[in-house]
Length: 247
Ligand code: NAD
Ligand code: ZN
Image (cartoon, rainbow, N blue to C red; front, side, top):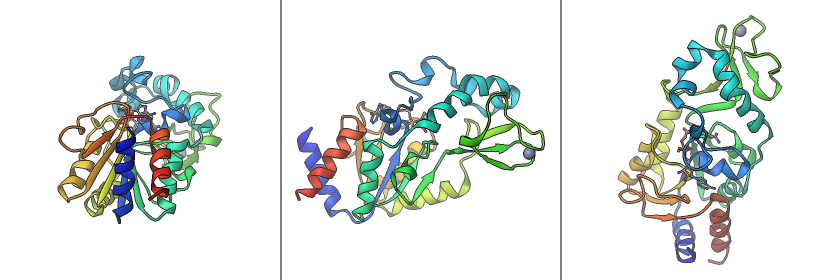
């Protein structure tokens, strides 16, 4: 792995405009389970039954009890790990400009990154399904499920469920960031959820180097990524940042 760490440090040193695409894997070391892979939520829940907007509309109480309440407990307590902090350091060093994240946990902003595109929305807020009023998730009382707005409407997380559209601004801003960057770090994503999985392909087509960090291979590994550094996000990013200091 050491050779690839050095290679990434050199590639970052010469890059001018770095973007990152992150997925659930970067938050695993913060105690948030991913969807797929070992220990993933899908080992015990069927996504179409719980994370599809139709499922939520049909039975919000069921989805709140099985998924949303538990997510609130985990996300409320989660702190950024070395993976998030490593990307924040790359911004401080004026390398990393934009993070496109599929995560809804807010940990990149907590680590200090300032330009974070939340492709799948944010769990930091709940939104009333009737009047649209927003409530900070941390402050929402979940002693009764489903939690409700002052107007009586049911609250839903301000995230993008399966079957919902990507927010338009997130969509066009990430296309822009992908075509503008000269290096894209792809960290902790299984790269199977569309259209997010297209983002590294757009970057590649526009001439960017693609550096993947993931303990597993993904559909991008062979054809799209220049190389894969196989390991956890925290350790790998720590080592890359340390190696950059020696250049
Ligand atoms: P995924 O769950 O499909 O895949 C997780 C990926 O992370 C896998 O490729 C796995 O090999 C890798 N991984 C596991 N541990 C890692 C580590 N320590 N370091 C680096 N990589 C690691 O995740 P996805 O591709 O983001 O797609 C799932 C969807 O689920 C996303 O769209 C996202 O919205 C949502 N989600 C978000 C969170 C969160 O906000 N933290 C958590 C679960 C799911
Ligand atoms: Zn309301």
